[in-house]
Each structure stands twice: as C-alpha cells, then as structure tokens.
Image (cartoon, rainbow, N blue to C red; front, side, top):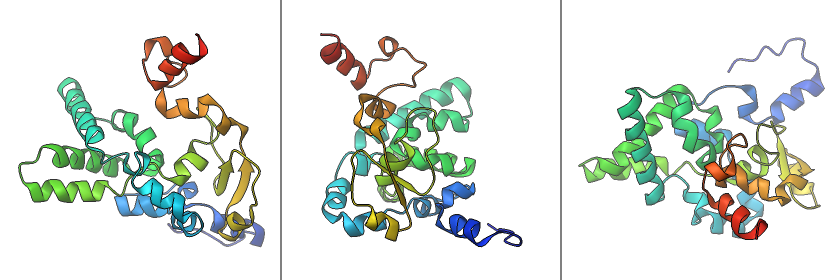
Length: 222
C-alpha cells in the first residue's frame, strides 16, 4: 500500500506506523498475507505456556478440526445447490467466528479458502487433501480474535492496536510491543462468549439452539 506521507504530522505518522495492517483497509489476497496482518508472535514471546496450550486447542485448530472441515464443506455444498454461486456474506457466516480476521480478506481469498475446504475433505488425491489442510491450518481463532476483534461486543468496532483484557494488569509488555491496553468489562459477561457460541442478537435465542441457548435454559431460567 502506498501512503502519501507529505503533510502528515509526526504524531499522526507514529500512530499510523503502530496501527495493525488491518486498520489501513488493505485486503489480504493470500492466507499468508492475512496471517501477517494478525501476527501473534509477540504474544507467544511472553505467554509461551498459554501459546503452547492454544496451539493444540479447539481455538488453535478452529478451521482444520475434522468436524469443522466436514461441516463447512457440507454448508458450502448446500448453499451452492441453492444459489449456484456464493457471495462473501455466505462464506463468512462460519468464518466470522472461526477466523474473525477474515474481515480483512479479499473476495478472492475467501473463495480460495472455500475451494481449499472442499479439496481438504473430498479430493481423491491424498496429497492434495493434505496440502489443502496444511494451508488451512494457518487460519484459526487467535489471541487478537478474542482480545481485540471480539472484545467489545456485537456490532461494535474495537480500537486498532489495542489489547483488551478483563482485569487490571501490568501493561508494560504490551506497550513495548506497540499495543495499548484497555480493560473491558464486557469480556467478563456471557455475551462475550455468545458472540461465537450463539447467533447475532437480532436472532431470538429460542429460535437458534446453540451452546448459549443451553446456558440460558439450563442455568439462567432454572
């Protein structure tokens, strides 16, 4: 991306330099470009134990978990049977939670990912299936998914370059890594979880059985 820096003040220039690439509105055309936009290696440097735990967790494998791959492949095929062609809004229904930073993927990349999912599940060539899975394994729900993109609630826009946390912490390490830290009381609520374990707020929870539905029915309304 070419930025016209002339006539930009030094403080503003520093802010631009610290902003995540996603904030500059460039859309990624490859998985590697998208991953680079949301690089979590600075998180791993300080939170090594949590990072290691995350790598083998459901969130760390939120795309290549076999159940997810099969489920999304079925969804894609069903949508194609009905519509013949798929638009971005169709393909990101699942990815908005499984890979929140998909919002910064280009239309081309989203279509490429859908093709990879189908290849990973049903291609007769084992080598092609494994290649597709390896590429898809780069996508997941990472630290910035929860501590930035999903940290402020449905239909809200988190600040770029911010790590949101539920409790008061020492923020020195975040500042050294170029991030501001903001405490988010929202992260302590069940609505924080509902963003991905339920449907959008305009859908009544009674009409959309999910894990959050179970929480409401079995714990809140008992």
